Amino acid sequence: MIARIVEAARGAIEDPNPILLKELRATFRTALFARFLYVSTGLVSLLVLSTGVIVASGDVPPASVGQGLLQLFLGTTLFVIALIAPGYAATAITSEREQQTWESLQLSGMSASRVVHGKFLAAYASFALVLVALAPVSGIGFLFGGVAPTQVVVGLLSMLVALAPAIAFGIALSARLPSTRLAIVLATFFYVPFAFASTSVMTAFGSIAHSEWHLTMEGPFFYIDAFTVRAGEWDTWVLLLGGTAYAIGLPVWFLLASAVAGVRPAAENRSAPLKRWAIVMTFATALVAAVALALTTSARSQAQMTLLGLTLLGLLLGFYALLFANEPPLPPRPYELALREASVVRRAFALAGPGAAGTLRFSFALIVGTAALLFVVMVGLRRLLHPSWSEHFAWDLASFALAAGLAVVALFAASFGTWMRLVLRHGLAARIVTLAVVAAAAVAPFLVAILLDTRAMDELSESAPLTVHFSAVYPVILAAQLNDLPSARALAHLGHLAVPLIVYGLLALACWATVEARVRGARAASERRRAQLAEAAASIRPSHPAPSPRAPRAAGASSHPTASDAASETAPSAADAPPREASSAPRDATAPSEPSDPSATDEPAEPSP
Image 1 (spheres, rainbow, N blue to C red):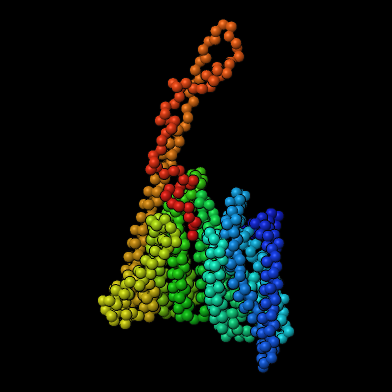
Image 2: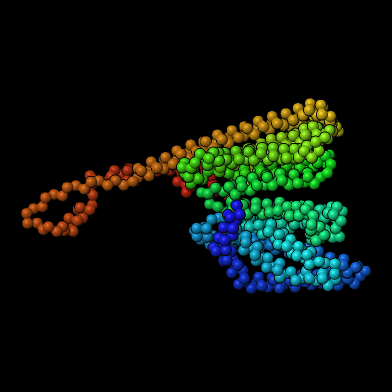
């Protein structure tokens, strides 16, 4: 593994990405980029310095002023990143399409992943230079004190980390939108609220860390004080570095994988990058859940955290279901041709390969495997850490109800979404319909129960009406009921889980069977069309009759042929000419023309999720 990483790094140095070099040269030659550097640096410097002068003129201690200015600088830098970086990166691929140079990139022989990664690295390096230009402004805090050099270094590194998802988000939008203006507007419109929400979450974590770790600095940038005060504690590195890798590294990977899938040609396996990401995401989520439980002391707190984690797991399973509900009926034709000469192991993995049926099988295995893995890890770790706790059984039943019930609902969403994709032939429309159906399945049983009895919801925490058992969120209600019951009653009450398991399980199997049937029909139609095209091509192929023997020449005739003789030899006679119907071979007006990709029988060229 280490040798492979070293070899990859050496190859990147010896053969740098040409897209990276091209973009950096074009950026650094632009006068607008240089103007943005000194304008942004001047405005941020003026803001931080003027704020420091105003605050220092009061009764605030100088150390507090220095810490406040450092946080103001980091907050302003983060605002600049959220406002400018996504829109800047959103022009990376759309500008190539508008300038009609995207086809030349495809014909250059570079893979789609290399083009996307080159665009990402170029945009990241260009904006990182902006952060380097802003870095000296952070030294204003040293004028007032209370700021350590380590805090400044950690803060600047965190801004470089926060820059990655902003650039990746813009690249992902640029890979899927046709217009540069639309990409810039959507990137800015969606990412700025996301940045504010993320800052609010970090502020909440900062309050917890301030009380638990006794830090002097609060707010969203508490970690710069944590790395200074608690640099020798293992939980600081595990929580902050591990949490950063999970909360930022995996989303960046997903956005880049989505961009690669969006620009890959239809003849390639588009869903492969997203499938690799989903597998890693499942194991990373299990690891994060295990660490969170290990840091919790009491058994009851671990049991409550298990229920919360499995409830959030339902959102992840639903995301998986919608993510892979955008595959055409058949795999790419080159993939099928290469599979004929592949090994037995690769053919076995091809059962979960590209195409609607194979990707649906992968979704089923991913959803079931993720739910089972999280259930085993969280429940097993609690029993391992607190073997003598007397309430394990009831909480285990509640955890099982959550994991099994939400997994079955996700299976239904995956199969129904794939079926809708084949019917509507549009991935976004299929996902919207699937979300509407799942939302109706969650809310409609409650409305029916209220219509039948206006007081039906009064005792929901103890016993739910029969119609509520059909709701998609009933496993959450059942889990809340089971953890308060004795073990014997909890086991008997678990039987209510049979209703959603049977209903949504049968619906999922029915949609799966329908998808398999439609895929088989599409494959048979593709084979028939391919045979018809081959037969038509053979029928219009010109015939080459054997030349007729030359007539004997009269005595004394010249041995050199004349022009009329040559014409008579080269022009076929009427008897030798092919029949008219064979030479002109009229095609049926209703027969479709041959597609560029024979496997795409009736599907438009559409990017994978």
